[in-house]
Structures are given as structure tokens and as C-alpha cells.
Image (cartoon, rainbow, N blue to C red; front, side, top):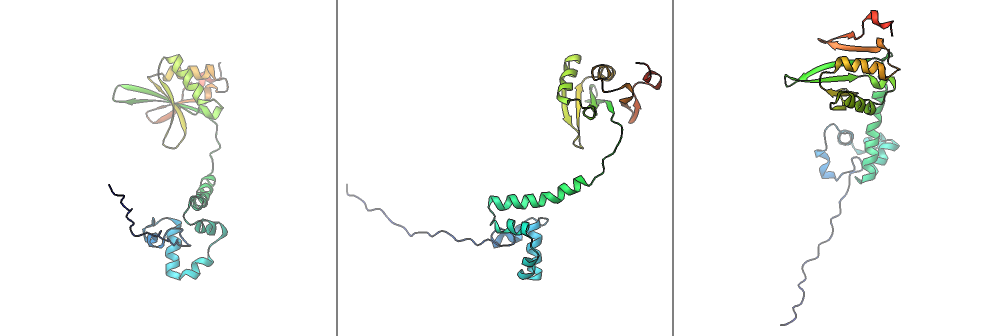
Length: 201
């Protein structure tokens, strides 16, 4: 067997990629950026007004994101800059200043299974995880903390325990008074304990 000389092929040089200073991605990808992204809007404005006009409008925080060259640090800075206006919008909402209340609701699913929903306990300083365990043990049923569509947490108890839950809440959690407990009946919120019972404890 003769020693075979290694066959050498042509050497391949690494490709030099030039990143766009405005968007932080290679120039050929600029037109494929999401149309609602800040980078695309700045790039499109620079195309319409010329590159010099767009560079004058950059601020220090935007310039840091663009100069990052598309690396992880540049993306994090851009994400942080984009998240700042969203946080301002959330904080500008006015919170309703009202009396905290516990709302009980009976829901049916699959036409025969019932779920009791208990919302508003957290406004009284009650830890929902511990309250869920308490309801599960007292009613010998499944109980869990669930987020609703608005992002608020409430407790779902499997079974029809609306009456027992109202009594247990007032008895177990001393900060919740009888006047604070409501229930929803045919999409109408009414006090669970009538006005005549509220004064008697």
C-alpha cells in the first residue's frame, strides 16, 4: 500500500458581512424586517430621506442598539427601548378606587359539571395559594388558582360550593366582612348576605 498524499482542495475564505448601521442586520435583509418594527421604520425613513437625515435623528439609546451589530447585546438594548413605551402606557391607566369585594360565581361546563369561581380574595391580603388549599380540603374537591382573560387571578373549585364557600370565607378570613361578599346570579351581581343579616354577626 502506498501512502496517498492528502488531496488539497481550494481554500475557502470566510465571507465578510457588512451590517447596516440603522437596523443592525445585513443590508440585504432590511426589506424583510417586520413592517411594524422600529428598525424597519427607521430604515424606510432613511431610504426616503437619505442616510444622512436618518443618522441625525438617532438618539444615544437607539444608536447603541444599532451599533450593536445584531449581536445579543444590541437586541437586548433594542428590546429594552421598545418595552419602555409599553410600560408607560400601562402605568397611565387610572385604577378604580373602590371598596374591595369577594365575588362568587357558579359556572357550568359540559352541561352537568359545575365550577365555583371565587374572585377578589387577594384584595384583602389573602394568599390565593393557601386559600385554594383550604377550599380543596374543606370541600374534598379540586381547587386551583387560575388567571382570567384580564390577567387577574381567582380560585376555581370543582363542584357547586357557592353557599358553603361564602360561609367559609366569612368565618375563616376575618378581614372579609359579610357586606364584602357578592355572588353573580344571571349576570347580575348581588350581595350574598342580605341587608338584614349584615348587622348581625
